[in-house]
Image 1: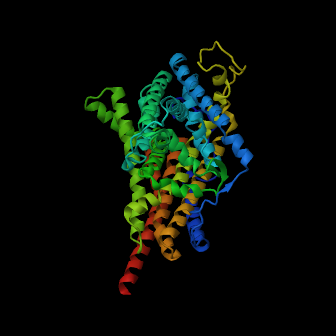
Image 2 (image 1 turned 90 degrees about the horizontal axis):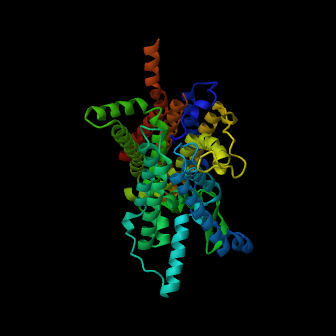
Image 3 (image 1 turned 180 degrees about the vertical axis):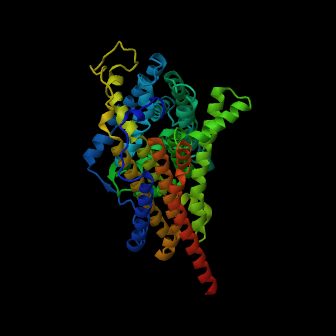
Length: 461
Length: 41
């Protein structure tokens, strides 16, 4: 996230009692101890059954009835409209325009953070789903029959969402490279293009099918929502066992690509101005030498690095899967690949929290302060009397940020180990074989933890 | 001092790679030992 320059520099300087790399060693020890504790104490699958418990009928009626659905849909469409309007008509100063902070911080980071606790919060507010459902209902009322749709190609699975996820981060981080970042006007145009594409796909394949498989934001936010404790089934709000809903998430092809893309894009964004900076600069220089202009060199260089991150994260995961395959009684490689993809969801969340939580805290002060009162950033409106508010960067010290980052990474990876161990017990009912298969996932988790901490330590330094 | 500081900065990743290498080495060793035991049986 690069449109607020020097945000990190405004925080205080880190003053840690031990070198940052020792935290990586300590985190690795925590993971190894957790691994052996799981092996000793967790000998049968516990998370395959969600153990849903329906909440009160009246509460479900209040929260899931038609009026709240309409209200949430209207709010979603209205806010998307405000963001697009602000992007088109507001100031080009990225930090003063409502559009960028609302789309790339409040929504892009806020929905994963809160959905991971409460369940999928984006679904009721999804503006495209709301429009698609209204159009579908209108068609049914006029034509007297439900709209016909093409059958969605099963093999395509969630790949459109994975590509879309790479596209969103590319737009935010890479497209704005060379300038002060992505411009509000370009963001608004991209939002309009994406809206047209999404509504067309919904018309072709159906609203719910597209939201489940192809619509980037639904798939991405819904993935984190599987970590949360609330869900819906049969029109009722239900409470479920924490983490248990993740176990059925990756049954659709391409799901692994979505979660790998999430970890890869966060790593790329974290590393582009830190750990990868020197190599990236050399690549851009080389691209310039072979005849590309400055902006094109920057964009191509960063695009190559983003794809390299995607490949790198995918290769580490596949090494873990291949390692598991060597344990006697292992299922096929494709079954293992899909079967363990959900174990990366808490890691994707941990990476998001570690890399962006301070940015989120700082930017939400702007969102609910001056951006709310002056969404166009023209300095001429003050809707709620908060237009003069400023961001207080002192509310989080550099040490606090670091400790939250370390804690997020450790907790995320321990949860990943738990999910992997639980799934291994499904494939290898003999707990000794299950444990042996998970040595490889332990290596994957240690690798992601150390890599994440390395990226952060270089960025913070 | 400056070039040395630069080298230390460049090689910082090694310190983060050490735990990964230890875990991978332990796994490879254990896998080879298990395979040998299976073959002997």
